[in-house]
Amino acid sequence: MSPLEGPVPVSGEPSATATVPSATLLPAAPELAARAEAMLLGLAAGDAAGWPAARHRAARMPRWTRRLTRELDTFAEENATTTLPVPIALNQPPEPLRLGPSDDAEWAAFTALTLVAGWGAPGGVRAAVDAAWRRLAAEVAEASAEAPEVESAVLPLRARISVRAGLGNLAAGLGPPATGHDNPHYFDDAACVRACVLALAHPGDPAAAAGLAEFDARYTQDGDGVHGARAMAAALAGALAGAGPEEAARLALAQLPAATEIGRNARQALHLAERARDDGGAFGLVPLLEHRIVDHVYSYGIAAAETVPVALALAVAAGGSPAGAVPAAACLSRVADSAPALTGALTGALRGPAAVPESWRQACRTLSGCALPWLAGTDLVELAGRLVPGDGGTPGR
Image (cartoon, rainbow, N blue to C red; front, side):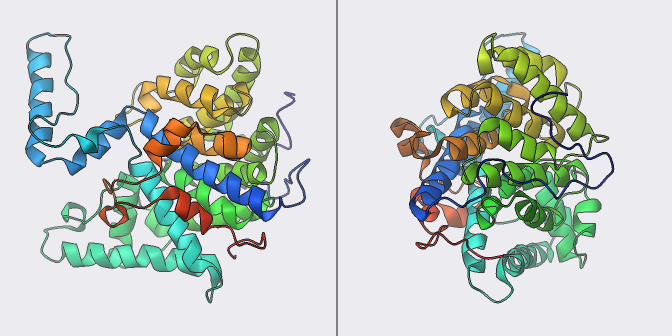
């Protein structure tokens, strides 16, 4: 058995017995706050590092600029040219195309604000999560009133297919778990990004963090999408309380049934990470993950069964260092839409305040509103400061 492996769930039910091996006591409030900030900034930096971020941020440019990019791509295809287009500004201000966070960071901030709303409120965090989803669903219902079907409604937000479908299901009168189960992208990792933030409700308590992450995930996911959210929440709950990379990986594995695709991939990826430690570290692991874990068939590279194992393995191979793990995740182009963000969140929490270089901190602390327009200008450092009470308590249950 690999030294990374703990108890392996063999049924469809994840283990709920894992604890943080060497971090059973909560860190002091300043340390927890620093790790929370590093987690958010690490997630944002990873989000920015992936090539899809520029395309997401281009949503703030006039529509014609994106149309022209598509036309140039068609030109390259039809004329067999190897000069490929990138998002363009031409005679427009290029600010939206500069390095910065995009959709993952904005949905993480959405979750962070939900967590803050649940702090001390009646019903706690779970009631706040339900209220947040139902508010968005009400907007979907309003927008779809003049559309031929819910899925074609023009929404005041940009979201993953799983989130859009889940909101459409809520607007149509369904509730979780049906909103996540009756969903064409139930398997994607949208809830895994949210789970990184929800772990802040239960630092040092991986089982409770996993339970909260599942509660949220059921609005948009099922199957591996839920397992992945539980795993990321458990790993982050451990990291926020001082666990090391291997301990965090064990906590994640405890939430991943061995008979699932995500469970098999995670165990294989972590085995590969052990091999890579003496052969190039995280960078040396990239080809192994590309050939053994990453799918090359499906249209979208956002399956939790790929991105969560990649994040866990790179965090271990890099010894918890964002500087080693995040660029390696960005090298995996097929999963670069979210794997770098998940990797950045985990390694940020593992390393704490020194995790994110100042240049990245400044480039990634402010949201542009490319996915959730009402979050434009949100300062992630300020938001992180609202997530941890001054007495070291947690935002609620």
